[in-house]
Image 1 (tube, rainbow, N blue to C red):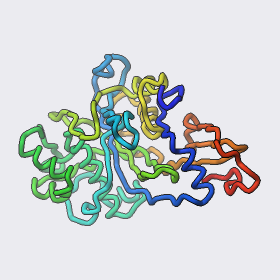
Image 2: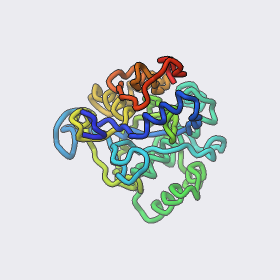
Image 3: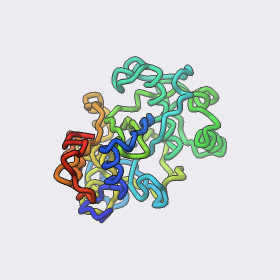
Image 4: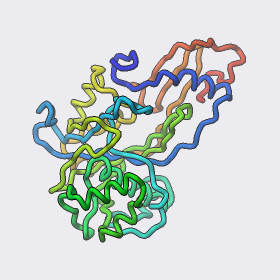
Length: 312
């Protein structure tokens, strides 16, 4: 059981105080940073490699180190922030146009390029998997050599932008290997805020994942059904966006089916709302009722409570 919950929902203890401060007008929301994360899939035929149970594709997940200030111990996907250096430099590009991606992601073309670059870069940085190739219909093979590792380390340290990396290697980014799946924005009362686009992708033939992240202490291939079952039992700690995207993947029989269904996914941003009602904090994520939480308030609401029961 995590944070006193019956399931594995990540819930930091400082949230109630921050929610009350936001409602009182003493907390100014920080502007969310753009980010991307990738649900990397592969067909196993027998479910998870760890249990051999379930059906459908397995998803690559990493567990954040318990020492991490944000969501320590929680299971998540490879992902991270957008690098603004990738928004306007010409890069080798295959698949849907930048204009298509801009419409799909709800941003301008420069922003779309940077977000897609972030998705591919973070998958390479944290899982060692690269969705790019020398041509628009190919993908690189093994990327575990010393020269590849040197470039990966330079990307992690931000000594090298992803656009520069692609140019140096003569590679084409394979945007056609990605499918936009969902968009979640960190609540306004959280001190670390991200506007995150979730993508799906299939593990390319000839490549393999590894724990290349300094933020993770383990990785696992697991079916969405097994992952959500572990969450429901309180055995696997996760944030609401992770659980929601896993539940969406559970109905897909293969990685190809997940990718094929991605264009039909609703990309309306999901942003948590908090209300103070009768001295109790009610935290909810629109469209995802399972995550609604009722938290007793240590400071009972008064008739002058500025929230008036309205979303904050």
